[in-house]
Length: 334
Image (tube, rainbow, N blue to C red):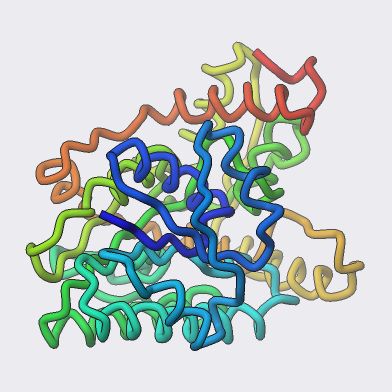
């Protein structure tokens, strides 16, 4: 199949491009900056020459990108919990989903894959087999919940929309300084000793890519898959660092009644910092962990045959990549 991939130069996108190409499909990218294609995909040892240049918020550009394709993987989104980017996150994520999924369905593509997130399912009441929507009333979560509603309306109408829900995405090979990679970098260098009491679903970026490639089969109708991963709390995260490096990582788990006010104060501080500075701790991230939502990923394990990479393997590979890419000094490596 010819597969249109939006967001292909991002963290999930570049790994997805490699997995989709390895599965034997042709890949077309929709990107704003064509010079970034080689930078992002080069380390994944994949080259894509079919590139449409333009904004995913431009309806005409999206129509040109969809034309001639058999399927689409919509991974383009602004992932940021930084309160300074709230308006951008809300505006971009919903509108891009409306345009890409709407055009793809109208053009008869099958499947139409929507990359969502378990944040859209994160709620105090817990999850279930029907994957109920979350309850976090903050910008990124709300943008992904709104996008999820677009996908679900199309699914209810019978469109072949396949929703894929990664958890917090860890792993090597992020072409940007993404929030998750920065947070792991701060932990590795001993500058992030606090973690909220609670947990969240975490996934390796390579498992996300495997699921995205695995669902590219037409004729199966609407489906939903949580990417296989691990429900992780702070103790497990710091233990993975300790196991991977052989070093101790002292830390404190902070109860929600204390972490909530601290997170709100951090958000207020973030707004006063220069745009180039971002502390890898945001109120929205804290709210995700405090809800401690567990999601069921058995469908992807059973139907797609994806078994998650062990957490210590993900952390170890990320540490190696942080050192090799020069993002941390060699003394922090394994």
